[in-house]
Amino acid sequence: MRLYLSSYLWGNKPEKIVELIGKDKKHAALITNSADQFPDEGIVERMVQDQEFLNNMGITSERLDLRNYFGDKKTELPDKLNEFGFIWVRGANVFVLRRAMKQSGFDDLLIELLKNDKIAYGGYSAGACVLGSTLRGLDLVDDCKIAPEGYMTETIWEGLGALPYAVAPHYKSDHPESNMIDNAIEYFIENNIPYKALHDGEVIFTDGNTESVLS
Image 1: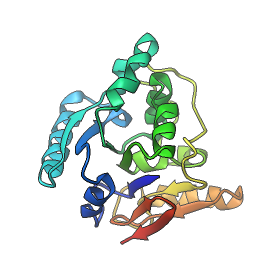
Image 2: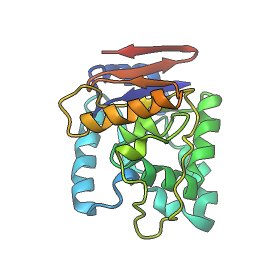
Image 3: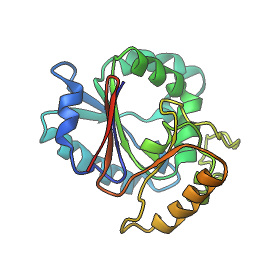
Image 4: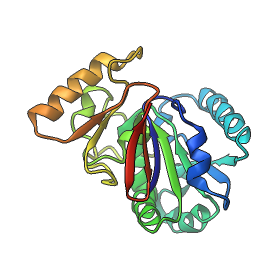
């Protein structure tokens, strides 16, 4: 697996993304669905910043809105994903993001692509947390009941399971959610859930069977 999972934004080692992608398919999908409960204007503004950031590293990109593949259209998603060598998933609400991944079929497709080393994945905050073993405890940080228009209302508590632990971003950081993350970590400990806590700037970096935390 090739993963670049940041606590906040691009973290302190974004140059490692180029290393992960390699020489082929330097075209990235930008997924912003964790913020679908907010006005699209602000989402697009931040996405353009991401595109400029990636472009400066020689990586082209485009938005991949998972809502376009809800329902019957999910059969079109595998062909679309073949166009990308890297996926970047922004943070916001991890439960909204998890619903979008489920309703589009992206969750199963991503795990298969990662297992077969067909794509590299990066994300921050919710984009990192969603890969964990569980989302339980993260409802102390994100509202698990938010369901934007077109979304299922059922809460999905299972993470994608690409990681054998839960991810706790913004730990002891200058971030408005930092205190709430402390509550989530208490939940993980009380319920014997393995976890990794990341300070803002830190990144879980996985290349093949080697995993490290970059700071």
